Amino acid sequence: SQTIHQWPATLVQPVGSPLSLECTVEGTSNPNLYWYRQAAGRGLQLLFYSVGIGQISSEVPQNLSASRPQDRQFILSSKKLLLSDSGFYLCAWSLNGNEQYFGPGTRLTVT
Amino acid sequence: GENVEQHPSTLSVQEGDSAVIKCTYSDSASNYFPWYKQELGKGPQLIIDIRSNVGEKKDQRIAVTLNKTAKHFSLHITETQPEDSAVYFCAASIGTYKYIFGTGTRLKVLA
Image (cartoon, rainbow over all chains, first blue to last red; front, side, top):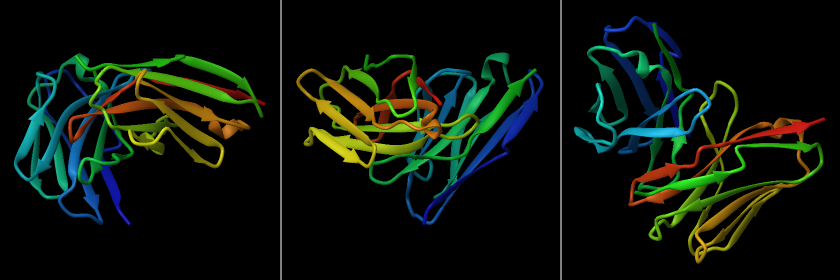
């Protein structure tokens, strides 16, 4: 069966510091991968998605970037965090554009 | 742009009663409509979905209906239980790979 992992689970970072969040999927090949952000009490905002290694589509222009160095690994990065980057970051995977399955999330607090 | 409206934002029901959450989408090309349940501090969990060639789908106590003409779809939970308390999100597919999510409904089942 497929599983999706995210780490770290929680993170507290000062403004201006770098960020690296990692997501890995097990038990499947060539998944579509997604990064979402969820502000407190709000809905899910799609940040990036990838349909293959090195293929990244950005949905929201901001100081975040994404990379997919391996088939089942998706990384969300920032060079300098802003206060507004605080939120709950969710990774998801799907096959052939069908059902999306979410990971456990990373709660990021920028101070 | 594409949009999904979800109502109500909060819903309180007595245990054993039914709950209904409604969504309206804007993109007439949307053909896949999932529903997610999110418990506090966790990633969303896919609970049921429906495709555009089906008008209704049921899985035990939950059901989803779709009216493509009106661009409406709804989640129905019968015989609600305290463990049904969570935030529920609807979504509509946009293109091949993406969803747009509703803003969420916080369901409270009162014992």
